[in-house]
Image (cartoon, rainbow, N blue to C red; front, side, top):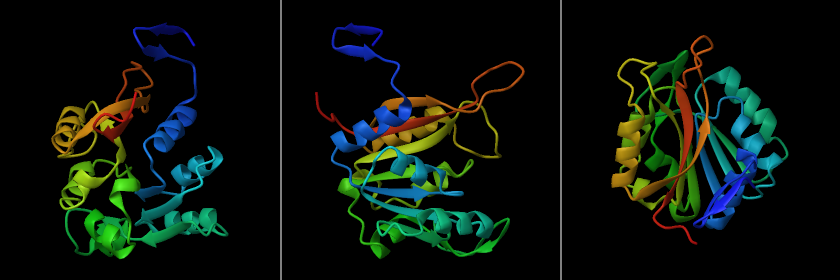
Length: 202
């Protein structure tokens, strides 16, 4: 620990350790992983001893196949191939794939948002994914999402809009993990933000 003053702490703890601690602290036992890619986040959760349910959704066939492999033998890790957006319609994400929404996944998988963390990794489509959670967003216990400081994709929502949108749904920003930086200027371009609903304890 570097500083412990006025009830605030700055530590050298790994983000993984702090993140899973907060997940448990907030009573979360399920993770809905949107834009699972090859299953990196699910593997990270398991490495950090998260023993709850994971439902991963990934649209690209080659990446989806790798998530299936990562989840093999894990009875609490299910996988779905679909693009997640603001409404149900076929989408082209490298290839045409069925689309769904967070609201529909919650219903179909019988998830309990009050005990679930929504993880979003969708390369500039954060606004659309959140729009597709109109019925359930305000019930999720926690949320983790990429947020960009500069525009990297046409029409994408940047950090201030995402933070404001989530604040209006009752979320508070708890943790930040630095992400992508410009290799020449070293300017931070993107980060991961972890939000929880309201006051999550002491």
